[in-house]
Amino acid sequence: MGASLGVSYEELIKSAFEAAENAYSPYSHFCVGAALLTSSGEIYKGCNIENSSYGATNCAERTAFFKAVSDGVRDFEAIAIVGHLEGKEAESYAYPCGICRQVMSEFCNKEFKIIVARSVSDYKVFTLEELLPESFGAENIN
Image (cartoon, rainbow, N blue to C red; front, side, top):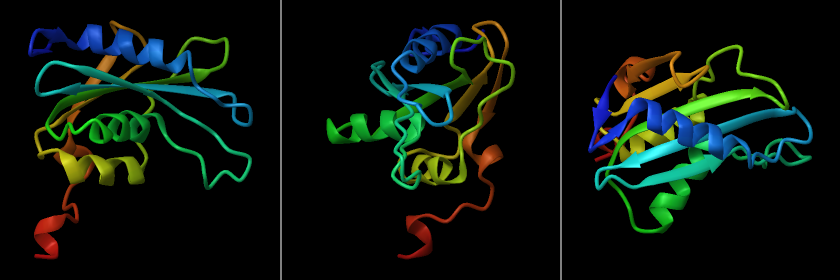
């Protein structure tokens, strides 16, 4: 369906499922993958990386963003997010947590697309504004 910069939502979702294969989730056994589309058409993949202290765990979405930002990329179009128990198919949509939504608001405009998927053909698309209304950003502290 939707496409941006020649990359369809379906392609982005497929990349997110590929990223989930690298998840390090020995505690929850819940694998999450994210595929972040840059304004230049590149895709940065991220997976969740758990830690025994739990607080040091990093979400797939933030992993993708931090990889891109550390490479100097600051312009983004969309992100696809998938999640499932190890060895099983996705049964529900994996929505970004509040911290990930806040990170997205740091680098993305309100029309940034967030795609949550159970499969390549079963997905929902939201804008950042829809998932994080009345967000706190740099404009609030300037």
